[in-house]
Image 1 (tube, rainbow, N blue to C red):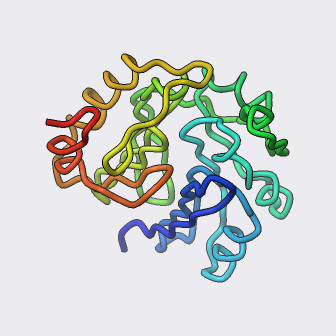
Image 2 (cartoon, rainbow, N blue to C red; image 1 turned 120 degrees about the vertical axis):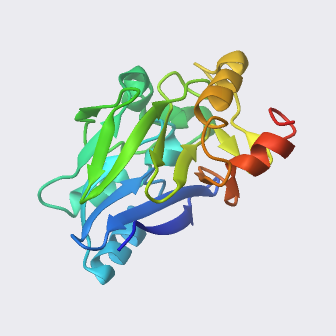
Length: 212
């Protein structure tokens, strides 16, 4: 059976979290456990899936706010994957204080993400693509088998990630999109950190910020 993906939209800024699993092994991971971790955990338990990993596209507070709730309920504690360049952001609670939010960041990252790395979930492989611009350590997760890119806050349907927060760079963001997203097959599904799903071909042609 192929990769299963259960999306959630959670938290104060409507962040997308993705519970993903290899149903043949019941091994699961959460990409960006945004908020309300108990909601994500309950769905995994309902399906009989074991959450063993948390993968962060980046360390902003609205993408990690549910991690502590998930980890506190599991034994062993899930492995946490984050690019080292975003560790300083994680250490200050994802910058939530700038917006009036203080979160418990959850377990310390134990997997250092790097470009070209392979992450395995059951029998399904994911390619890590380092895509800085929104944050220095931002990464996207590409599953060729499922024809899907989890793009975090790099690119959205008809939009792109903001670059006005600490560590952001417009030029770097555009380069990341053109080199790491627009080089994928045009039928690749994009599941982003906010908003609805889209496709590489659609954004390459029509995205008002980087398309055309």
